[in-house]
Length: 436
Image (cartoon, rainbow, N blue to C red):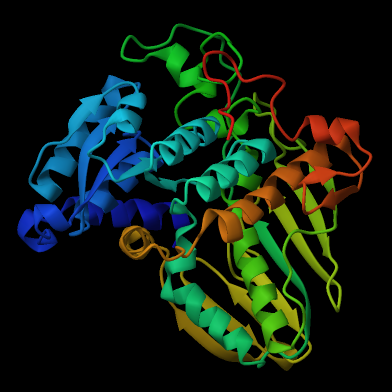
């Protein structure tokens, strides 16, 4: 099943639950949540948190009032209590009754609310990638550490039994010695065309939607649903879906390191990329065709590669998007609903099925708020490194040369142009990136 359809179906299933089925914990035991966003991915997050018996959505902040109706009704049905509604997310930051902030806004609106929430003593669930760029993600980690907050990035596969069981199998050593892993996207996307600029809908506070991004005329392509294809707001499909696949491949490589007594890998030492916007004749700015190579230096060097063909109507290794790790005894392919191990001559050795539903990831976050343990996709150790892979791959493609990364500073050695792309030219006032 296509991942997007699968997740959409899961969200619809949540919406059909009754309050009796949710069986909420007592009010004093629930984590009180404010959600930034009501449409797109935020719509699903609202449903997951409202359906969790240990959480209560107190307030939803949304800059487009047209997106509120269905989400507010669904949340009310699931939790038996209607959430408050505001336009400005700062009401969530300032509300002393909230324990956590959930950020389902576009990429360019991930960092500032996360940092402000940490400074206000609130824990954060933020969608992937962590920030719009490396500098933002780095600042988010600094805020999390300084204020001792729990920050879970929304790569929900980290909490699935599907991925956990795959990593356990790799740790058993059954694949043999592993040096190479690969991630890919080959799910066909559409042409978004070249519509003219227009007028924002009356329901939208467009200036707040732009936030720290450059002031530009409204265009329906640079807005709901399609913002991710533009440099100002998104990170392309590498940061959209690729962050999941790269993190699965990275986790598999680290499990193999554990099995073979090798040093754990963290950030790569070298990144090279080739590709561009070669297929679609439309307004998209990020590549539709891309190949990235990440080199890791440990006791035994490792290679992680990423391939993007978002115009391809067919699967690779039997999956439209996924990850594979190659060993000298067998290789494992990890998809969104299963993992499979193949041995010599393509013989299927093992297959385990599972899902990518985010409910366990939400529950893991809520449990960690109470225990103060690190969540499954802890920002510092999991979420930010995975995001840096995406940002660095995009930067390598834009400058067209191999980059050498300093893992301590997250800067590129002797490359002024690449380092300028680690952040924005400026964060548009008043939405300046907070100091930590």
